[in-house]
Image (cartoon, rainbow, N blue to C red; front, side, top):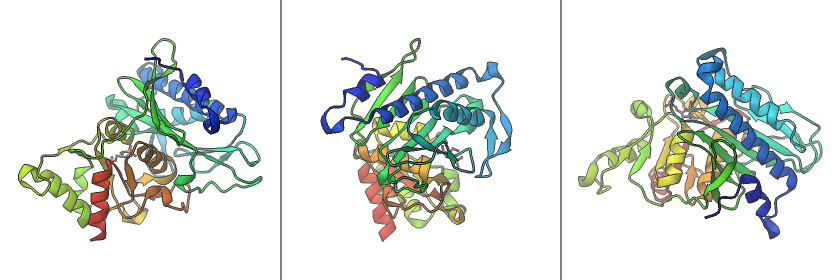
Length: 327
Ligand code: P6P
């Protein structure tokens, strides 16, 4: 089986799927940034970049040194992309405008290092990214519905570094070849199984959950004699990229719902650079992505660091949860 490089894959698109060369340049720059971030993570112990940076981001979360390093590398590497107009980063309060926006320019939203609480204990972390297009000259509106994304994906820095990408025409996985650093197509046409016996949720928040979520989890844990008629496994890595990647590879459902503790904030995960890109990936792989009540990709953002509830993965399970929210 041939394993084309990311560049060959992107340039091989034919017909109406032919991609704008400037979008290809941007995707390659994003891949380069992920490769560099992966190298920094592998060498963190030698570069003295483990531990805390001493500051906090707009979310009020303590920034890890590698959060700051990863954000800086994304900005440095992607800022030269010919038609990139703005950066929206989890680690930066304001939007970074690189040029006067013109129709056809790109907007890049990213979480440069997601799950960074796992860095110091050497568990898998990732970078998440999303690309939208500027529709009109001078348009500085970055609050785009998730359905307007033209590209989304993530890098997972695990036993292997992988880039998982959708250009709106299916989901493909590229593994970073040790030595050359090339991303090669190793997982074409990723497809989430509709049913599953695994779910991912932070169970320590049980007493904050709303009734539909508690009902779903209680039924999953009731085992073969319960209403689901089978035993479920619970998995939680506290790294969204790692949990979503497992779901993409073998099915499952990921829940970070709104609950009594985070309702005032709207949830925990951020819409523009976590929920939306993961929702596009999951839908393009045949799954569903919801707040529990609404399709995530339909939400009209109100602010660029907005948080939302997230339930996504195997379509039968997400549909079941949406049904519980309606009863
Ligand atoms: P908790 C990491 O901080 C993150 O944003 C996601 O990657 C992850 O799914 C979630 O938060 C973990 O949250 O409450 O388990 O620490």
